Length: 376
Ligand SMILES: Nc1ncnc2c1ncn2[C@@H]1O[C@H](COP(=O)(O)OP(=O)(O)O)[C@@H](O)[C@H]1O
Ligand SMILES: [Mg+2]
Image 1 (cartoon, rainbow, N blue to C red):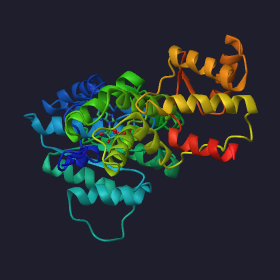
Image 2: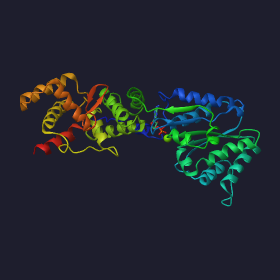
Image 3: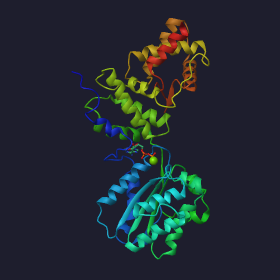
Image 4: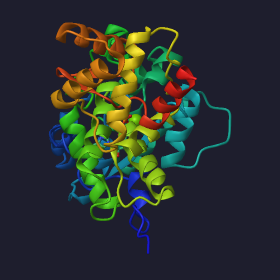
């Protein structure tokens, strides 16, 4: 009987909402943020400094914030720290955001207050109860774009009016420019750690993928090369975005299951990549010369024998060169051959990474179909 690729309910571990038990390559950042909060949890609230996390999509910003909330939950604290994470894409207007924050703490009248008054209400409520609010503003770029930093300014002003900090913000931005463009008097208040979450490199991405493979997939349900190819695509081609990696893992698994395969191979990953939103390849022929097409044909034939390979090895390339000579009577010098490969790289059919040629951006099935069209 066919056992499938995924464990029962395994796919949930590939959902973006799932908070993984481990966050490889972000532990240090998490610890810095936790250290910044430790004095607060011990009662020294005024020691808090406002941190900024920034980085591109899929670099783990939201996940680290969620892990931070989990970690706070587990700690014994001297103070009552309310915790709220808001996504500023949904609440980009100061008024909506203020309502959301205030409502989280206390019941408020449905209308009739400005956002300044609402936030004052939040502050007064906290003071009255002798409580605090840890406020994570995720994707804060949207808020800053819409109000030029007025909400952030208000937050810092409220604290200065009282004798204690009551609202402790953490800012998460996609671009540091959003923060740097703030007026100086607001920017100066962001005096905590500034953490740049860099795009994951191929090795880091592999670690992240491997953790999820263990959670979501049956034993031996993915090849080593398939894991690497997901890491290469999501890191080298798609900007180090872990979301892409999770999506490719899920979709290549679905494709493998549909084909009743026992394990995910590189070819399944390439097929999954082709179906990613935004994926585009240009039809061949328009921009590639005849000789290149012939070489492409031979490469594709070789690769089709090895659906679980994506690195064009020296050995394979040598074999391709002699086959081209034999079949088409085209004798290529080493330099000619490399030049042709580089043209394929320009056409984004082949990728070059650390001096290796990789076949990851189009499936062998698709290139075979395109070539069949061409030679018809
Ligand atoms: N270091 C990591 N370890 C495990 N999973 C990660 C890691 N970084 C990101 N992810 C996963 O990638 C996805 C995108 O991460 P997310 O935190 O939403 O990125 P961002 O907020 O920077 O766009 C999430 O599903 C998350 O679980
Ligand atoms: Mg996010």
